Amino acid sequence: MADMEGMSEAKRYHLDVPAQNWSYALKGCNSLDWGMKNRLANIFNPVSGKTVMLAVDHGYFMGPTTGLERMDVTIVPLLPYADTLMCTRGILRSTIPAEFNRGVVLRASGGPSILKELSDEEIAVDMEDALRLNASAVAVQVFIGGPFETRSVHNMTRLVDKGLRYGMPVLGVTAVGKELTRDAQYLRLATRICAELGAAYVKTYYCAEGFESVTASCPVPIVIAGGKKLPELEALQMAERAIQEGAAGVDMGRNIFQSEAPAAMIQAVRKVVHEGWSAAHAFQFFEEERQKA
Image (cartoon, rainbow, N blue to C red; front, side, top):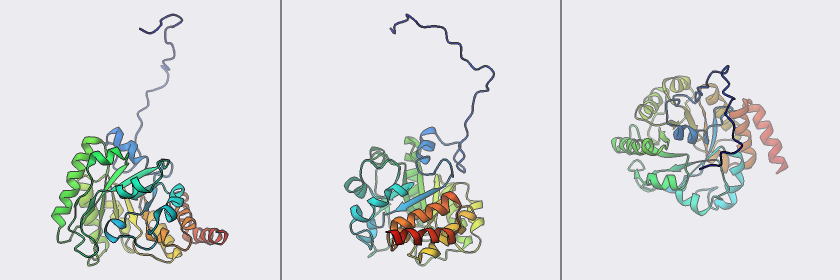
């Protein structure tokens, strides 16, 4: 029993203040469990509602690609500027400092290398291991239109079921494949399928025409993939247009870690995503930071 001596009757009930009923502002996510929303808050900045994800999971099918040969040298210095790190569990355990306290999105599907048919993937991470690693979300490829479309969709739905059990959001990554026509009609189909089947948010590519219809028709947040390496100004222009047309952030890899000045580039991307800077203004910032470096 607690010591009752000195205790007094509680008086501060604030009867004149209505009870607060906090809503969660992230698109389509207000009805999720508290644990899901708390994990998503580690991915999406609570002030801007957007995210800059640093994608470094390419090695799971490409091996040590340019810029990722020594991730302890090239990626760890970029971590202070990322809202979220998207990586594999092997890299997280072997390379990422435990002091990194922002969101981690674990690549949860895999199988074939670049030498094989990429869409032939299976689930490659157990949900309990994702929890053990304190992940904020797990990511799975969904190959809409690919030869293994049904399998990849089932991979996602199986993860969604386990995620709902444990409070783990699932990121559906779609529009993957060289043979695909990434126009607005296709992107609307692919992103909507992921959302309808339970993805908490979706990663897809940007298209120059009609992208606003893609974000409007998807009931959960969309982040854009950076894709192949572009000149820095073009990558910033793509990010600016995507944010203006409804994207909730970017998930960039090669356009950051293959940049001539990766730290300057990720900071410039942050200016566009979180502060609403124009691409031209952010590129000027990039050039100034690059020269300092």
